[in-house]
Length: 155
Image (cartoon, rainbow, N blue to C red; front, side, top):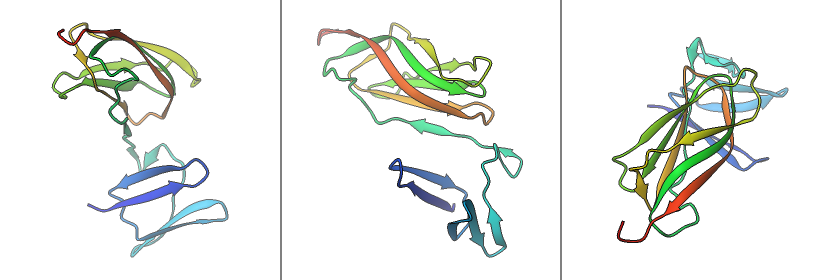
């Protein structure tokens, strides 16, 4: 599998592109250009890749959410905007009890708040959040705020 890496110096962010069959890239007259043995290609900001919807996944680093104690999550508040539904997955320690939630689009594509109600039986010290688009929609996440219930060590 071929892939490409890019780094945005303005915001210090990196991106990985899978199945990226190009051997070089550049900006020319403000437009991204890629090259391979078949020729030169303009990489526009289309919502599809040659007609195929673009899947996007962001998995955040494992977090203790600022509390080094076992905890249950009562709920999560997510600031987001999207052109369609996004899938929000939450996994505590061990990774065998992931809960998956759909956050819907709210009409116009504007930043808004969504609440994720967590199942009561999920508990852990470390947590992982994963965000995926549905049907290739565009999305951005502004913030994620957890509402924890702190447990004693024996629970």
